[in-house]
Length: 107
Length: 107
DNA sequence: TAACAACATTGTTAGCACGTTATGTCGTTA
DNA sequence: TAACGACATAACGTGCTAACAATGTTGTTA
Image (cartoon, rainbow over all chains, first blue to last red; front, top):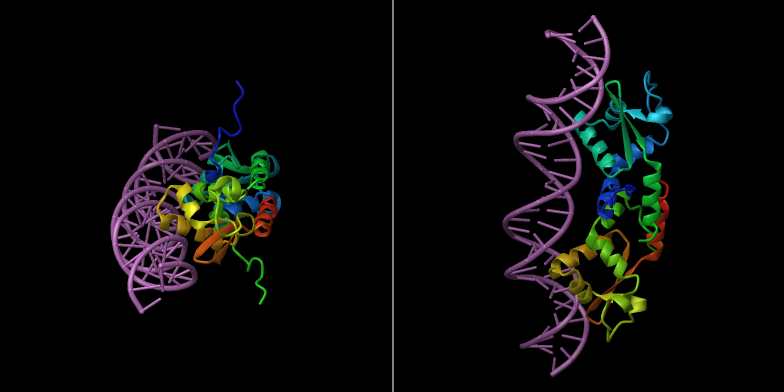
């Protein structure tokens, strides 16, 4: 059975996810993980995205606060989390982001 | 005096303005005031938009609640309010809306 | 000017968003 | 298995958002 992508997420949830300077920052930085975060020893930044720790550092808020921002974006399907050897990497879900953009242009 | 369009509104404010089902509804209805609201005796719905009263009715919330939603959209410069003979009419600010759309596609 | 209709504003309450610190979970490594 | 590092969750305080009821303001009309 084909799973809808995403499972009929509310447009309000999507907009609220990006209606935050911090989360816009995260999305912006993840456009180019190599340029915006220090070099990673494990996990290809291009393929898997940036390590959670780096995001926490750059945001300048506590670790749980950053964790929640990331969760909001993941729940909205705008970010994809990859667990790998004790770390979690985040990257943009370009497909979902593009769908959101296309929908917004119909407002 | 010509007012800048818009006066450097925060992107977060803009997104929060539309991150609400109620306000998305208002914007949607105002795409076609003639179709979505009862006929008005005064004020051309095409030119000036729909009367405040009609929006209150369709939203189904109290008048102050609707008034505040409209104020959020006006403050974000996405709606334009026109006062005319004791009534207030609201219409979409298509220029600002388009600017917002174009900006969103760069996220 | 008095009365009324159309909106806006204020006061209040409930819920949500976002920050913190503290604690829990889980995989890795010694 | 014990210890540690990475990350998630819990608990809590605070400020913002959104609802309603009540009141204020403003323009029109009698």
